[in-house]
Length: 324
Image (cartoon, rainbow, N blue to C red; front, side, top):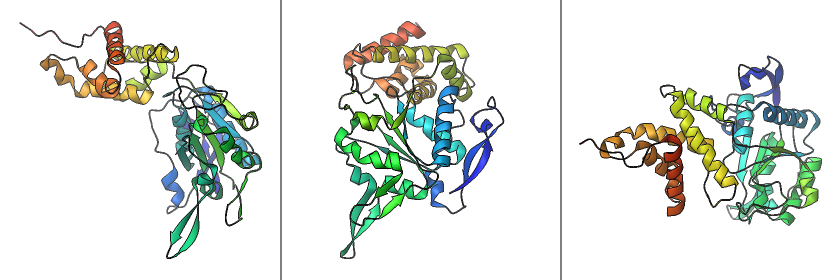
């Protein structure tokens, strides 16, 4: 893996013009296909960005000897944070979503049949270690605690022994282990995240832990302003206020079982503009778009609550009065 440097201003013009590690790849390198797509409108929170870049720089310069755990509610942008850092530093990133039945051997290798014989193929974690990619394991608190202890040697010593072949694969520079979770691993006290597990304390001790919350109001209003530059800022502020109220209800455990990610918020605003013609049919575009972006698929009670919040905050009823 070849390292170069870039200006920290790749994270925004307000960042200091200092050199930070980045990567360089051959034009035909397979690694290029694993570099996340750059989102030009993404806005970094300063302290979180500092923690992530510091973690990566330490892993690359001293070897990956611990992981980074990004902890936060659904839709807060945990995966987006690490992916957008990688996108700006040209870092390949292999992202896998965990589940309750995930076993560590699935991440390390797979045996496949080829022409009457068997072949051991690298799993995503081994590939990331061998090639020098950032490995992201999403929803790590869904995995059984006993299963995750199989990752201890990888996190602490930076190597893995491939089952069946006995090959010892050491992580090359560029590799780093990142996990995302809704809980910190101590269990879910809110009742919002069914299926999450209490993780082994020794395993949890192998991570730097960073809380990732929803963006501040001014950040999201500014983001929407850049994407929807023809919309009035006060209108966009209303959309953000609705999203924040829904998030608060979700986090408070009031029974609100859906929430607004920034992605969903952007989708809602975009659909509201696309379906502006619904106004002429007696239906509010804002409410119609809310159904498409979030409310459809929820219970009737939750859907009614979402629409009530829109009416309360934005002051628009679902049915538009028709001219006489």
